[in-house]
Image (tube, rainbow, N blue to C red; front, side, top):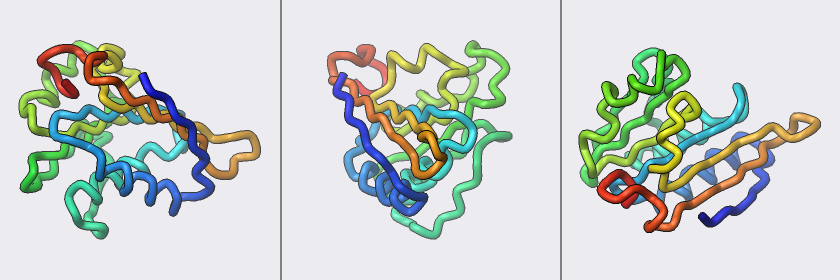
Length: 154
């Protein structure tokens, strides 16, 4: 596991970081977004989706009620999931997140399905620092050998 830490002073820097990070994502990657309410998970997810799809003005609604919002692109789909309302971890199979191995999967609130941790290619943990200004970001990138064989991120 490779870990780096960043300070994102405002929403614009969070968006820029997400757009830059999207350039490194590959088909089959699983990206987990962790953090408390208001930490910036949705802002970062929207930036990732918009950059991956190549449309900075794309409407990226929160998938809180649908649980999964798909986006098509020539290089393969992007699936944006929000597990906040997931009833139990066993429901993760029903969402179809891993039905298309070429998909890049972005998951908010992965704490609702802890088994996703071992499958993650990238885990982004956001926190509001003391004083409430900006965001602290911890990026954990798995080595290819650390992800489960035959599953996303391998």
